[in-house]
Structures are given as structure tokens and as C-alpha cells.
Length: 233
Image (cartoon, rainbow, N blue to C red; front, side, top):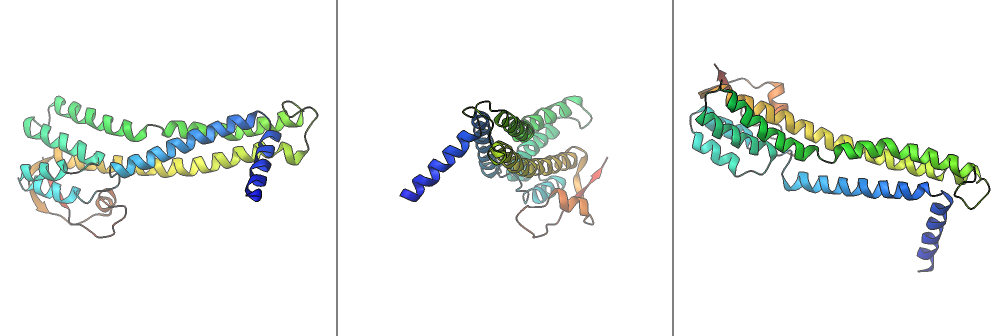
């Protein structure tokens, strides 16, 4: 018990020595942690990256089983499935060259992508600001501003810089991880919608291409799936 209290007291003392900027850095770290946790839960609950349903749904669609294709995507919660559902419904009712068809699909795609992108810009901003605030805290501490009077030793003044760099590094790592997952979902969405809108409702077997595997790849499943390439008009 005493050891834990000593650690806490030393941490508080170290934060206090870092000056008032440390409270700004703590606030930034809490915001970043909240966003990262929320995004990870969002991706998990919405099955972002789960794309095993794409190949069988497109196969059914190209073979003329529109109801079967719609049934497959309607059972999924991923953003790609939501957009595919709208694309199939709109394609069955509109001409593929109708601008209203494109507008309807784009509206659904923007809605899904805006939800996935939300919070990422804030993480990017925190990653940029944290080291700057850390440097500012070091300068103020060495000038004796906000540190109890008198300039602080270098090793004490550098506390805020170190804290800012740690926050920035962790935030950047999570930002690029989350952004990469969003980008992969976007590309899978675009490829799937193109296959629905630009294809006849008949299909022919096609050779697999590396780009197709990448677009429809299941992130945590290495099993390959057969993919039917649509006959374009």
C-alpha cells in the first residue's frame, strides 16, 4: 500500500514540476484515449473488415438471384453491406445510366464513410499538438513560469516534452491503424458497388486477380473465396 502511494505521489509531483502545460497534455491524452476506444468498439460492433459475404452475394446477383443477393447483404452489419444493399435495391429499380442511381448510392456511401471517419481528424490534430505543447511546457519551465518560481533543472523541464512525444507517438500509431482499416473498407465498398451497378445480371467464371483478392480479403481469415467477375455493358 505504501509503495503504491509513493508511486502516485511521485507521479503527481512530476506532473506538477512539468508546469501547467501538463494539465493540457493530460486532457489531450484523455480525449485521444476516448476516441481510440470508441473507434475500436465501433469497428468491432459494425464488423468493419468482415468481407466474406461479398463474393457469395455478388455471385447470386450476377446469376440473377437478386432476392438471394439482397438477403445475404441484409443480414450483415458492415458498412460495405449497407451500401451494397442500397445499390442492389436502386439497381433493380433504376437504369444503370440514371444519375439518380449514382446519387442514391453516393448518399449511402457518404453516410457510412462519414461515420467511419469521425474522430480520426481529431486524433491527427492531437498527434500534431501534443509535442508542441510539450516543447512549450519545457520552455516555460526553464524560464521559471508556472513551476513555483525559479528556472527548473533541464531533466525536470524536459518532462513535458517527453510526455508530449509519448502522447503523439501512441496517437499516431492508432490513427494510422484506424485510417488504414477505413481505407480498406472504402476500396471494398467501391469495388462491390461497381460490380453491382456496372454488370448484367448474368455471370461468367473469371480468373482471380490480385486486386480482387485484396478488395474482398477477410482481415482475419486467410481462406480464399471464388469470385465471379461481372460482364460489363
